[in-house]
Each structure stands twice: as C-alpha cells, then as structure tokens.
Image (tube, rainbow, N blue to C red; front, side, top):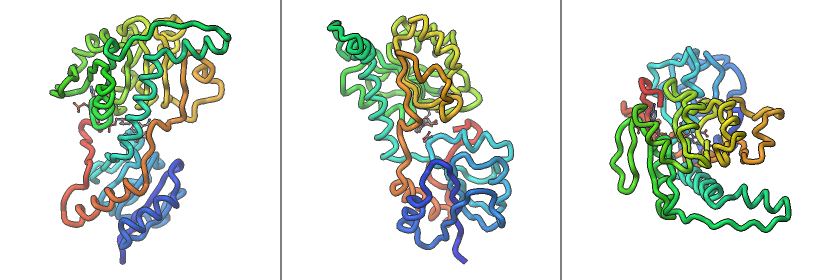
Length: 312
Ligand code: NDP
Ligand code: OXD
C-alpha cells in the first residue's frame, strides 16, 4: 500500500499541488480533503493551511505535518495539535524572492513619498518635494529570519541604512542588530520605515501597539507583511490619523478577508493588499516536501523543522 499524503487548504489550488506531487513523488497517494477524513488513520503526511481544529489529532499515524506557508500560527493555534509529530514550514527561494520584491516595492514607495504624489495628482497639483536618497533613510526589520534577512540584503543594495530586531543577536555585515524586548525601543526610535516580518507567537501577538508606534520618529512609515495579529489595529489607525505615521502598507489583518467596513480600505495613507506579499509555489515547495518525506523514511527529521517550544 502506498503512503497517503493528505492536502487541506481553502486558499491553495489542489490541482497545482496534485500535479506537483505527481512529479516530485509519484510513489505516494495524494488525497485532497475538503472536510473531515472518514478514515484518518490512513494519512501518513499532511500538507495543510488552516486545517479545522482537531483534524490533525485524528490522524493517528502521521509521520510529518507540512505547513503550506512559512508561518505556522495557523496550525499551532489548534489546541489539539499533535505535538509529537514533526512540523515543517515552507523555506523556499520562490517565496523568499516574492517577499523581498514586496518589501522593496513598498519601502521605495514610502521613502519616495508615494502618497504625497498620489494626493497631489488627485488635486491636479504640481507639488515637488526634495527627495531624500536611500542613504538618509533607516529601514528597520522586525524579524531577521529567512525573509527579513533576504529583504535586508536587497535593500542594502539601494543604499538604505539597515537594522534588524530578532530574538537572538545577529552578526550580519552592515545590519545593526537589536535583540530582545529590552532593545526594541532603541530599535524603533531610529527607524524611518518599519517592516514587520515576525512569526506570530504568544510573544509577538499585539507587539505593535500605541506605545511602540509612538517610539517611531514622526513621519515613519509601516509595512506589515507578517500577520495581522502583530498589530493593535485601532492603535495603528490612531497613529495614522494623528499624522505621527506618514503611511502604511498592510498585507495582513486581524480578520481576513478584510471586512468591507474596515477603515483601512479607505484610509488616504494606507495601501491594502490581500495577503499576497508572497505566495508558496507548489512545484518548488513540493520538491522540498518530497525530499523531506524521503528523509523521514530514512529516520531523519524533515527539512525546515519548526521548534515547537519557540513556536516558529
Ligand atoms: P523565520 O523563522 O526565518 O524568522 C523569524 C524571525 O523573527 C527570526 O529572526 C526570529 O529571531 C524573530 N523572532 C521571533 N520571535 C521573536 C521575538 N519574540 N522577539 C524578537 N524576534 C523574534 O521566519 P520567516 O522569515 O521565514 O517568516 C516570517 C513570517 O513571515 C512568517 O512567520 C509568516 O507569518 C510571514 N509570512 C507572510 C507572508 C505573506 O504573504 N504575508 C508570506 C510568508 C511569510 P531569531 O532569528 O533570533 O530566532
Ligand atoms: C506564509 C503566508 O506564512 O503566506 O507563508 O502567510
């Protein structure tokens, strides 16, 4: 009997994944789930995005679980998550490239005063302002992991001053490292464009509140490509309304899809994108998952293992 890979997601196209797995690993059965699995003990591996709570626990013979994204908050929020099963997340050059493009696009937009010129154009007003060059702008990245570090490196090539905040100290050429909560205020105080690329964990939920936005210099801009749960949204709106923040780019929200009555949709200094900063590429990610499955068969851990104690 071939091993069974089960797939559950309401946002990824099952056909792409079925095809990708047929290429990457033809010796497994690939089964797409749309609801509870009638015979869950048949599942050997699960590839999931926001699986219904309790479903993974019913799959008593799972050998590994694969998150369909880099983030794993969507599985670890399940109180019944089977913590004895290895959990792997997406670390993939295509995902990284997409995120770096998004971050660079929006850092440049805010630094080059995209909102000022959009509003001037709407008013048919010729309002030149002297641009600052990148070397006069500090970009601060919350989360200097796989995605944060790649974006930082690319931004450096424009000449931006870079700093990063992480749980542990980093030693990256040209990137000023701030570590731990005790250094967060100092990190924020010198940041002109703040980019959030943190994982959502109990330690980072709600981390961006009125006090933290208040630490940023006046006219700082904010880009959130991580999770809506990092931000106290009412505090962000207040910081935008007061003019303390010059603008924000938001890809992720506390509630997704963003409700039609959210003020973010219509705020004159907010760019909204629908959680598309970067998307997992089925062909590329399936190859890595297939390789992980081969490792598990040999008694090795899958690639890109999540540390459950840290939550990312
Ligand atoms: P990584 O795990 O590689 O990096 C996480 C970084 O955050 C690390 O530098 C880590 O520090 C730091 N960190 C974690 N917890 C804390 C804390 N309490 N205090 C300070 N620093 C902390 O993750 P990725 O870069 O791969 O992904 C980041 C997130 O991006 C994902 O979790 C996901 O939510 C989001 N994402 C969003 C997408 C979108 O389309 N909007 C697409 C892909 C990802 P240390 O290095 O010291 O461990
Ligand atoms: C991810 C995401 O975590 O797309 O990869 O949000």
